[in-house]
Image 1 (cartoon, one colour):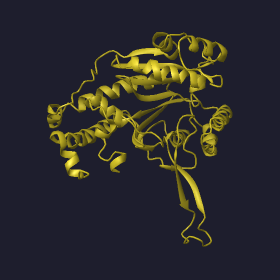
Image 2: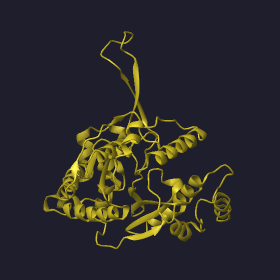
Image 3: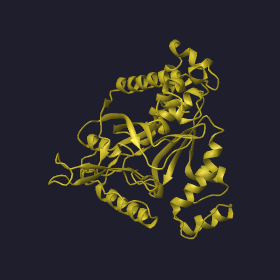
Image 4: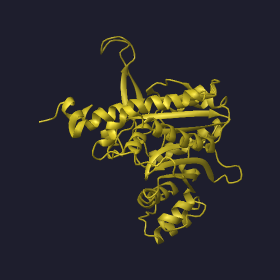
Length: 355
């Protein structure tokens, strides 16, 4: 017999009940941190024409009646839209509209994602700074984590730390290790991927290191296999790791380095081996962005994945977008890292199975 919500929240000494309180304090701390730094909170839509074209993400499709007419009557045709996998496109349109510092704190949706650290619906924090680079956002992220860590140590949350399996295990003062993707693969995956855009060389070296590389695999597939199977497990031995200087094949929305155009100004942050944040210096060239979108769609087509529309409004807005940087951070995962919770469902009042 399924437990009631009340029974579920009060299990294990009220573990989830206390985590609901910790979540509320975390959201307050996030807003406090960004508001004090002059950011404006924005409210992008959750339903969009294009959910994003990232190769390995699948969106949730929704159908809406075009008008108020009853089914079968004129004006009752269905419109196909998608729940956003990220509010990124709309945030950048706001940035293009003249707002220099913005943040969004809202739910995002991804189909086919359910596991220890994944839920189809989750909370995403994104913030953007005009005139900044990805390194500025790395510094922001570290300061935010430290601020939120302090916020959860407040007296009213002390009973949380007495519960079994929970503890503020994140050492906010520990140094953050920063390595490039190439350095990380050479160190933990057992081979040097080179420039990462020489596909024959990448195949040979990855296969020699024991990876299951297939003839049709592109650079993105080979590199992701190395990262997921070998690099990410090794990152669990470190409190915090910044993985940066990504290959352009894995950075569709990022600006390349001027002197190393095969590398992107992208970073990811891992806390105890769990990906927390993904950000980059923004690409603001609409023609180049269109070319990348078309390449992403071609890859999705080749892999048999759903093809989504290109967001034409977003591309038009890029022409007015200032030099900027942005980052997306998983709020549920941050709460997990700060409390020691090991399942994303523990830090959500209504995970997928109870929604």
